[in-house]
Length: 369
Image (cartoon, rainbow, N blue to C red):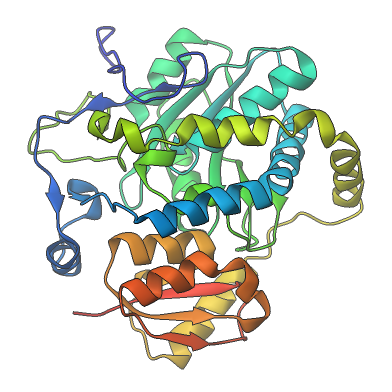
């Protein structure tokens, strides 16, 4: 049971009605490590959640690419948002629905689903963004907070995309753990915009295409950092933490991103109806075939640690922005969708290799130090 005095810090550049971050602001602590130092610490056993990467500051060409990609894909993204929102509505009562996005990649997707449901059904669904950390589970203090404010909450977890399914599995285990000790029972079903890993049942697409919010870090996620759990200064019973990068306000495109996609909602109903019809005639059961691709990549490139294989556009982007890449695998059939990957690889002098034997359009391999 948590203390009733637990309150999230006000953070993030989204409108207050769009999302509440159930996090504490740890801006007073210096946690950033440069890429090489952080990689060495992680590979030596320090948990990635105990420190932060230095925020990548993109050049003008890269920022321009983000804007181009957003306008190119805004309709495709809006359709995917609508498809996910409609599936959530079918599975859960809108009366008690609470959207819980996984910070931070899930946050803009949660905002968009909330806005779609408001647009289509004139409902104001609560939306919270909470921390989940691989190997350490979900922030149970945040979950308790939600149930205290919404006793009948039908929680729907939301994320941006799947890679090899690590967070899907982490969420499932975390919910089982929570349910074993609480009266309120969590449904671990995860809804994502893109599921190239074939490991969730609720998705907008299984195509491995670029979700533009993967291009940037905090400046497209409400100026909030990746989440942190560091027991040196965070006590049990407190919310997980994150930094609020107010100093990056001039570069912030978080609201531009969701506003641009929302503007497509009035024009996509036919596409959504068609997409829902196709989904009804298909089997959404996860096959986890993305994981089979990862195992094949491991075997082909003699990689001992599965954590060093980061498949899919979103995960490959993260490798290039905040890890030490060894090489990038590209499926040549999807090169048109991978301009930003090729640009980042060139900027960081990372070799790119053609590889077609994977379900993904690309894959980032981390350098073993």
